[in-house]
Length: 517
Image (tube, rainbow, N blue to C red; front, side, top):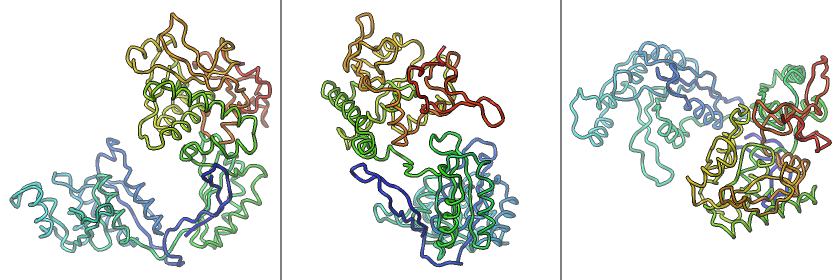
């Protein structure tokens, strides 16, 4: 088992400190088993298919207390398969292969494994029966019978489906310590999920995660010092930079087979890393809270005035859903800071009004002709994060809305992240119909009384992801050719180079659009 202090949000939205325990296996030390993984397929080496099986196998084995020492990717070559299997089989407790099982000429994994152990392949009676039952009457040389030809020492492992209790129709084949998985991800996952007892270990990993808001170069010396200090305790320290996270720059994972060693190493890092650089109270996935952070929690506790504005925005959205059915409303979302805050509130309201709904959230993206690549990447992430059904339209807003009206006539209202301080917005109300020469949409404006600082307080207090450009000196985003960093955030770095502070540090919010050309 492994454990360390973490923070969770209770059902009321309040953060509290808990000790989160992750169980990997029985807690016996110095019994660590090892494994090698072989991914087989020319299509992987040619980039024609993306491998996900090695990730899933490694994750599962690690959870079971098995240390993966090597992952190989090789082609559909008989001799290469035999050589790799033989080498890994003699080096590790388990070898797991994926791919190369099938009826065609390039499916040679069974034969390769057999050759690794100086065996031949032959029809296995159980698999012959299964193939004939599935494919019908077969001749000995039919392609389907290739699936039934196994190494002489092969063992069949039939798992049981945990959902319905039925025995699997196809087995996992093993020869000695080599377990031969199919390359189809859904079949591989089903097999290892239901046969994980074959790889159970008496050892375990004890891991802790530290998030550091500093560059790797700034903490490298401390990490090296910690590694040397605990080198005799089997402590490993992994440092993983994240260029796109808004709250930390490096994730540090401390791990050991010994829980006490892990705790001592973590304490050392906490004491020696630069003060203020460790990120506490971080919530990895705010969307998973389904709005509890919006209706209560830290905003209510620490920012009562902003909390009242949040509740007012919620009331406006709830009124919109009273006026219109949910399929008649979509949210305008272009990846900017305002609509990012609004999207999270919109999602929270949807979760409260329709808790059992599996429908995607309707969204409208009016795309600039020259968008930032970072903004496009954030848009893609947000679509996945909030399960958006997004309509992407190009060009000016008026033309885009006209196109939306023609293509999606059922949409009657668009929720927008407009604030009163935005250009041409001082006369708007919570519900404002478009002008007569515009398409007949109702504009719903829940954020009119929010300020620039309100937006940033809300986003950062809830650990909401936002476009990384805001951390690089941009305070208002438009087309790439008409947007620059805000000069009010410029400062001289240690080497005399000009650097830019994040958008949330801007003091004078009247300068928000400084940088829009």
